[in-house]
Image (cartoon, rainbow, N blue to C red; front, side, top):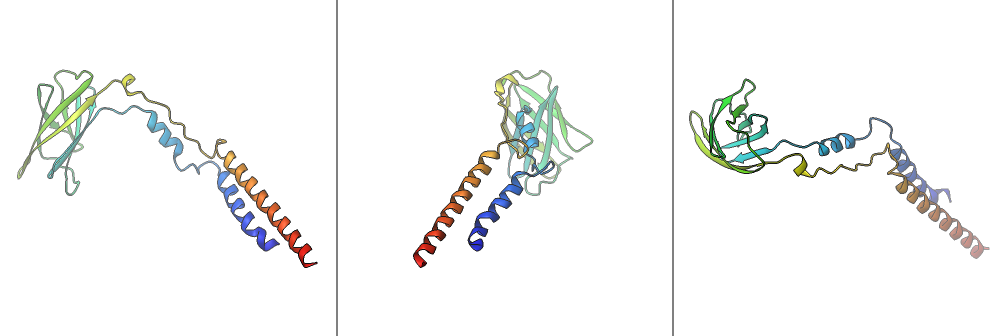
Length: 184
């Protein structure tokens, strides 16, 4: 009978150990929930076969990162010109390898078509994309409901496994009792 009960109790011991994992064993659920709730700055992504240009709208302008599409290596020696909302902007190279395009007029809420002209020593390219400018209220941020092992979200699972294990034990005991009566 002990050989029959071993497959029933072994999974319960393993599940019970995993359900009661202590601090530091959260696998980042809390960190992921915190980033879901924070509003993101409006982003711009444009790519071609030669270049990839990614930018975020920050205060007075766009913070841009330009890289080679094939190798993902940063392109720091390019001339970058943007056209957005009737403004023509030459992006200035920053010390960290990124570019900054200062806007003459702030962008109001809405969607804007963006055209970027990229010139390097050997190549040139024209990229197009859209920038969606929105306010924090328009984002409709909903709080994430992540349940971790430190809360009580695991309790129904553990109770369900205990009920299943007890049902298997009762079934096994009744079957053994029935077999003893048949043999006697």
